Image (tube, rainbow, N blue to C red; front, top):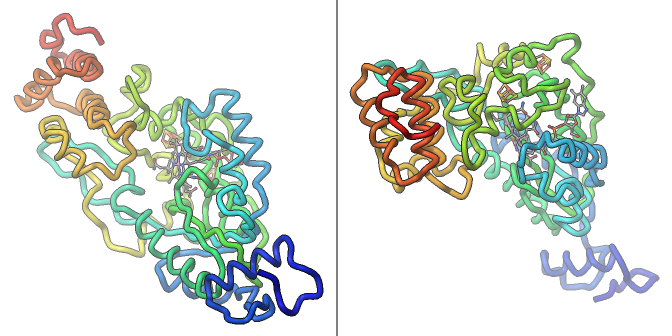
Length: 385
Ligand code: B12
Ligand code: SF4
Ligand code: SF4
């Protein structure tokens, strides 16, 4: 379809936009000049904040070349530790136009998940869940970004929400949009909010007027608390995490949990907050969180090792679990039990006995390690660790 008013025959972007807009808005005339081309930033910002986002920003959708270089260099150096996600296809993850042809802008949203930490339940071994997983904050984030996307579509543009997926480097987008700075922990910190935010974006072919901000300058200064606080020394240089040592990744790794990091895991059953808990800007927020506390901060380890696959996945299925294999959750639970269990507790002994004869060789060997750690070597017998 051609535009009635343009002097030249339509090719390229103008032609594409006319077709899209005519379809999207049912414009009767064939003129691209009927179409509202640019969208005002203020409108999108108002919608995003009203939908519950704690910060919104806008950035151009040009490729993230520095991050492409970092992904490739870290992958080549092995620092990705086998992670796929954005490392599987770095070019796709760093070039928004691969996900949406003609992408021009990115509207970035951050949702603050700082909540007061619920007390650890007493009386039974419990695993600690990292605060970004106490609730499904990504669902909340996507719902809010959907509102922004709807508004863009209402203006006749294409819009697609991308949050914590493999096709966009979320931190780089937030950094370009001037939402925050890159901390030495490698997390993005938003001034006045901190790093305990989940990040996502709306990709759109719309031109957005206004709202562009300069990147936020570094505010870490001489602080190095996150580096010192990491239990495994995974922050190998400012802003660089070696995933092979990061507990958050090791909990998501397929296969055996590396023996050398099992003790350092402590009671963590999903994710790790140490580098963020140590961070002074986060502590300010943690002392006066804006939202009430919720439930899923602690999970019962014995129960995890007792219930069937369906019950386990029903309760923890929203976690990232390799191959959706419930035995990975049990594997992690056995390492936690080894670290915090009470050898005199009959329930602990019972779950170890049962795991030692499990059909999974991985679980048998983790159970043997746990038994030995707890001083119950006699249970392990000849099962190898
Ligand atoms: C892979 C991944 C992981 C991996 C690897 C983490 C990593 N640092 O790469 C693992 C599983 C370990 C992980 C853990 C966590 N993750 Co994660 N993860 C991702 C994922 C899927 C991709 C990240 C990526 O591409 N990294 C690539 C590398 C190259 O980027 P980078 O690490 O940010 O490196 C930058 C800096 O080094 C900076 N840089 C370069 N030179 C220098 C020099 C200096 C001095 C400094 C300071 C910086 C700097 O440039 C690099 C980018 O070009 C994103 C989601 C997404 N699609 O983007 C979420 C994401 C990054 N994770 C997130 C979260 C919440 C976490 C955890 C806090 C969860 C938890 N509590 O357990 C931890 C934090 C661990 C940590 N310290 O990073 C959030 C981060 C929010 C934020 N405020 O930054 C994201 C954005 C998910 C989301 N959409 O909300 N994660
Ligand atoms: S998430 Fe935990 S293990 Fe990973 S870098 Fe931070 S403190 Fe270290
Ligand atoms: S702990 Fe200090 S160095 Fe690390 S991210 Fe926070 S402010 Fe920056």
